[in-house]
Image (tube, rainbow, N blue to C red; front, top):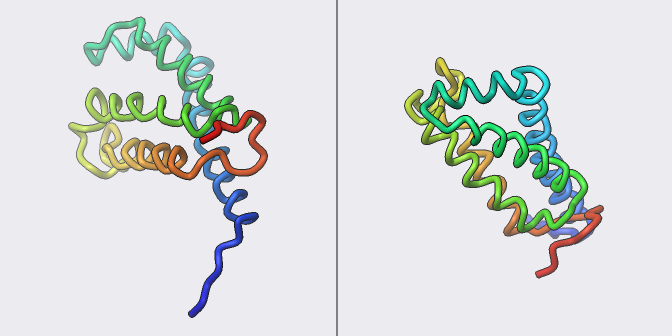
Length: 136
């Protein structure tokens, strides 16, 4: 079987990954902001033993990364900023709940996959339709 890779479709596949990762960050950031509210998110972080101010950092980072990834603004490098955020959720929230995300409290499967996908985004580049490509 002989398969060829099309640079044109590859660029769109990479863009699809980038946009999907960005939408996920937007959904999580907007949920914290509009559904749980900043005060509720601060309370949740404090219930985990984390500083309340970290909730604002997480919300801001999720929203900014979401916009940057969706629009393709230096996405290759900004994707890496999400990795520590997601690894932090594994350590502070999901790690003790086991692997499966269907476990009570959500396991670490989903944030681990998301972190790996962000590293893949960095390795692949920005893809098509990026407003401000990252460069090499």
